[in-house]
Length: 166
Image 1 (tube, rainbow, N blue to C red):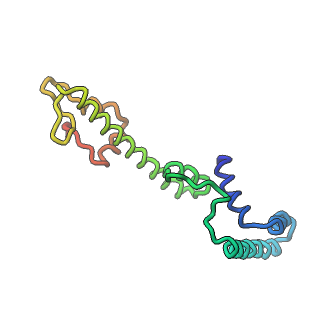
Image 2 (tube, helix red, strand yellow; image 1 turned 90 degrees about the horizontal axis):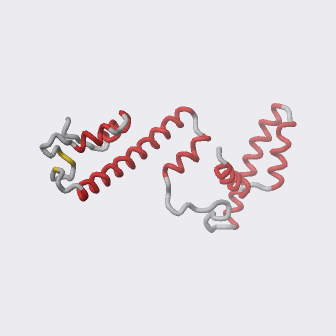
Image 3 (cartoon, one colour; image 1 turned 60 degrees about the vertical axis):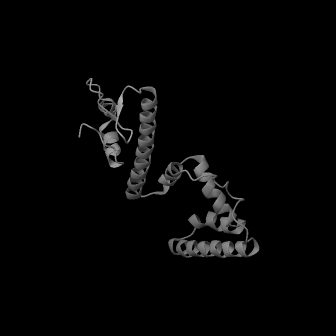
């Protein structure tokens, strides 16, 4: 876990705790098993009570413990969540990240196709802007598709990519 990720968690925990609660946490490992269980519940109770009291005194939004993100970045959020995930959750987040990466790749390919359409007016394009064979045996889409990995091709197809080769 990166230091920045830890600092977000630590800042939040610090905001809703007191020195006395932290002292109890330090004492926790020195207690016997039964006392540890009871003390752990008591610590969580104190933290909840402290949080409730904090919001009664400070009804304004949280801003002191962390900087608000200007625009949500799902890929960054996914990366920050990974250290706290189970293996199953980790796989799901990795799938989400792959999906987002595929969507970005699709957007980039679409931009490339538009640029190619502008810079290569002699090449044949269909009404939807996708390249077609120009009759000379040069098929731009096949050329671009051959540059992709199998996973990228699968992602392209998933997002509605169609080729003349199909």
